[in-house]
Length: 276
Image (cartoon, rainbow, N blue to C red; front, side, top):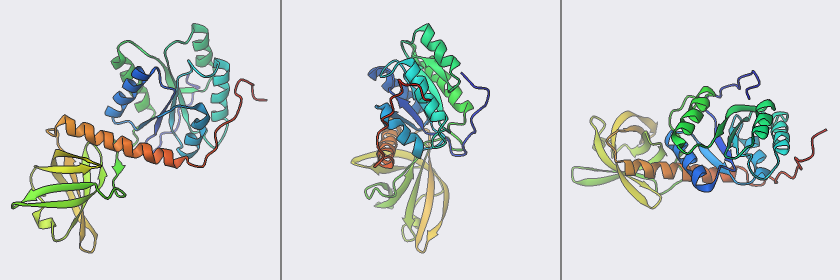
């Protein structure tokens, strides 16, 4: 239940974590649906690791499935420990459940720590996902960005390929979303790059290659002999290509997410014991 104060909206949006998402097939569908709506979503499979993520990634949304692992009083103690610790108190907590009893549901509604809503899994997930998206938007989850992006700077194979005058050219892909692609192109190759009209290029992401339709947005000098160019990915790009781009983005982000908490110890608190 909302405690009467709206959490501050971070300028660059919030990461969204699902701790114990509902049963595998349902949870996966919810997470994938939110990814398609361009929310930066992750899953956590162990509550003992949750605070490590929250400590590093401030302002996150944490949706918890309290059907498993702990009793409702223990979960409420867990929520209290998050909201009362400055290290991760900016975390915004929500509930996504399947089997809560009316008594347990009321306990959660009345605890004062649930700011991101309480959502019951429905047979038709569209309505639930829509409701979650409305609530997440009210919390500024996307911030100023409308699409999830991944940096390709460290991926040596990430490339942007096009054909001009019977020759194939390749530029370094440095940033990708389902809406745009940023590249670095040499001054020598720039005259062969179409910056006037829409055209078809190939993206090389990991071991996959896909065709996309693009239109130039901006080209500007980056360093001596090198230009940065941003291309919009247009609506006639095949859906299969968009799906592969999305898989690459979230696969890249998930690796970075796991790396971000390396070295953090697990939470050994017994939440069944009420804090003094």
